[in-house]
Amino acid sequence: MQRRSLSLRYVILLLFCLLILLILRRRSSNELSDRLEGFNSSVLGELELELEEKLNLDHKPKLAKKPKCSNYVDYSSNRHPPYSSGDRKYPFMRPRKECRTFESDALEILISDLKSKISDPDLARLLENTLPNTLDTTILWHQPTSMKHPKRSPETFVVTGDIHAEWLRDSARQLSVFQPLVRYDHKLKDLIKGAINTQAGYLRVAPYCNAFHPPQGSHVIRAPSSVDNVYPQPNWHQVFECKYEIDSLASFLTLTNDYLENSDYDLSIITKAWLKAFERILIVLQRESLPLFDPDTGYALPAFYSFKRKTDIGSETLPLGGVGNPVNFNTGLIRSAFRPSDDASILQFFVPGNAHILSELKRTRVNLFLRKADIAADFDHLIELSEEFIHGIEKGLNEYAIIDHPRWGRVYAYEVDGYGGTVFMDDANIPSLLSLPEMGIVDVHDEVYQNTRKMILSKDGNPYFLKGPYFEGIGGPHIGIKYAWPMSLLMRIRTSDNDEEIIENLNRVMDTTADLGLIHESVNVNVPHGKDYTRPWFAWCNSEFGKTILHLAKHKPHLIFKKEFAKEPYNIHKVFEDRKTS
Image 1 (cartoon, rainbow, N blue to C red):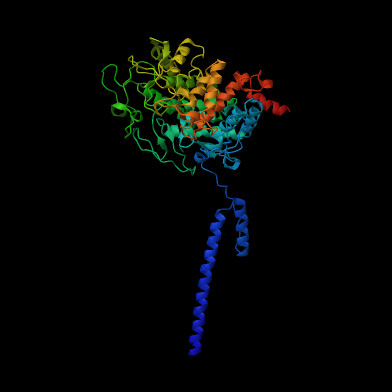
Image 2: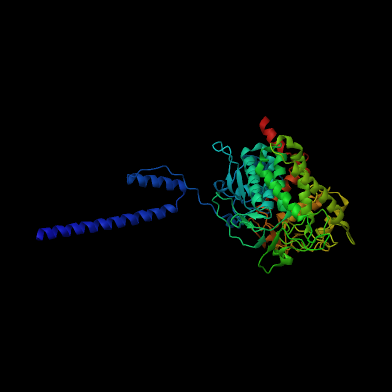
């Protein structure tokens, strides 16, 4: 009995020791795991291999973990070396190469070539930071064309920056500056084709909406958004915001037309899905061309769209039960409930938006309608309806949008209602009155445009032209009456032929980056160096800066280039042709 009792004690003691050993081993393993979390991916992979070999475990190859990348909101709010050699000492604000969301070889070639020619090292650095910002930071998802899945179309999700949602307008303008490069970079071409496909998908399901969540299957985390009282009610799992803006519809056509013109008319993008999205656009235009009241009976007509939001900000919702203020009949113009700033229209015939859709329908006529024989689809009914809108909007703008102003002469109004009501102002967001020549609606030297330009660039002509001791420019109600948008100065540069005006406004923009070397959404005109600004990461405006420098390189090279390059207009295509022959 004593031996049996003793043996039992030994067994219990042995089991206890084994239990302690297992606990210690697990703790040791956990501690090792915790330590590994702080290592970089390559060291992590080596340690995992060693650990598994020691434990004689079956090892399966593992992908190296991507190095931890900073949130660009934080990254863009702090200066990073190396600094430019000019007086402004701009930091280098591009994320590390492994942290960039998309890479384009053609863009890197273009940046390098421009830097070698620009005389001011600060301007060269600012271009280096801003031009690639959209590709560096905002391509949160791209599904490329695949040989394994030839029927699968490319898709691309492009965010605005610090808000993880895609605005149709913003993304089209963010990508616009890269369109001339698509013939030299297959990956970039595929990216933009993907952006067109993704926007077409959004428009097919929610043509009244302006901003969208990531596509299903992208595995991109959705940003929280408000759920408003909107008719027709969208699917809020797909839609981030549903403000009907005519320029959002036009922007899809801008994205497509830019691609067609720069890809030597690659019509493969004009699929049945694209044509269905275009049809949805025309249906919305048809509905929103109707007045509030029946012209024969005077009765109120049913609204095709309404928007109501619980808010104490008047510009964030619509009056009259969410329908908006009345517009007259038989004007040829199209209603827009909201402006490109996402502020509610006061009078819903928004003139820059009507000009934008007119411009894009005309471009679509040239780029697509005249090539319909090369497209395996019948869309004659869409062509016919488009021609009606082209005729009606053009007539409406000439009859209702040009007003005899008592001080400024014949000018374009910002908004009209067809009853004689007018809103005289301009907003920094594009499309704007300032941007009319860039849309191809009027020549920059046109008398009515020049009168309008003088009006909207003066404090007594435009209530949102803001001027302070440190900055001046056009703002808008979206941010308030102290903040002007650098975007308005960039458009001012691109619509000017005056060297002094161009240099003055370029310096204003360069002096108000808050020493961060990026262009912000808006800056307080009363605070030096742009230190009080909104949105540290606003890719749209960075793309506009890049586009402005390319514009000056082509039209005013003597203002920004070294002497040996100052006489010849810059030609992007020559850069790549010279590389082929060298």
